[in-house]
Length: 176
Image (cartoon, rainbow, N blue to C red; front, side, top):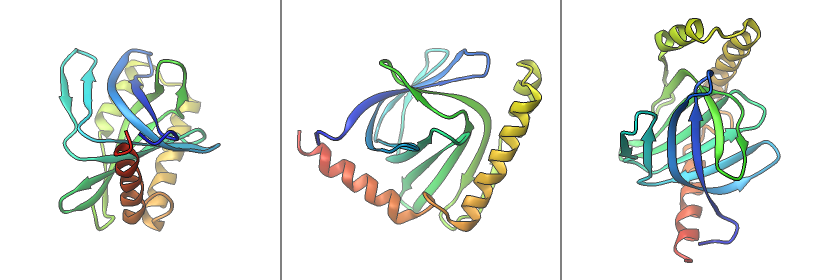
């Protein structure tokens, strides 16, 4: 494996600090002051209830230190799709990359049309976990920012960029 690459586990939590989901292994292919980019392929994902599944398509994910979302570029046969999670900025410790998932998601298809998903789940958790007003404001603001990035096709909403990172991962993985 390319020595600049680093395998990490990803852990997603809910606002009440309960574990939501674990991706057993992803490979960090870029890390800057503001974000980290990870790639995974056929990764085992373990749900909080212990059930597990494996990702079907390769993906490239951007996690941000100063934005309340992450962006997954999914490489499908019919083109690149994006799946965006409204989530806390990430932290990394000795164990894993960690973030809090706030339920709201945006699904972006290959022509960049998109839909916001899981508003009902967000509203349920917002009430159940008593999200503070400041947090609700941040999440809605970041959701709107994310929509503007999609509409403007701002970084990282670029199909070629997703393929470039995936190729870099493939080339680095063959050097083991």
